[in-house]
Image 1 (cartoon, rainbow, N blue to C red):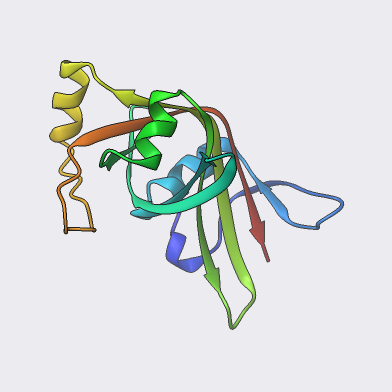
Image 2 (tube, rainbow, N blue to C red):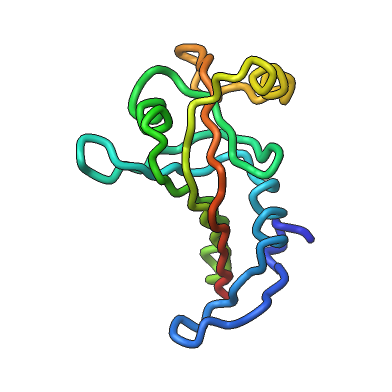
Length: 146
């Protein structure tokens, strides 16, 4: 599959939206094709969506964090969503993948060691993000606009 080409395997068409529904395998391939996504969670009783650079590791989304809102959501084991997409404005083509699951703060030293070996370096460099957050997927879904 070539994510740049925007052509992905569609397994069904949503009757209401007329969008192509992507299978989970295709969704995971697309997740692995891009380094930036958005994590959505509740902060101060309001929804908040923030960009993160991430990796797909052992069946889940992982990213680095500082002490703050994202880490608080993970410590609270919040149900979160994570979204990636790619759009081609001129042709009105694109796809979107959403992962829904529970976030948690990674504290196991062996898992942290594996994550450190991924080479995932924060794009925001004003402060090193030393803590890891993992999203354990409960559902993975995707759609393609053609």
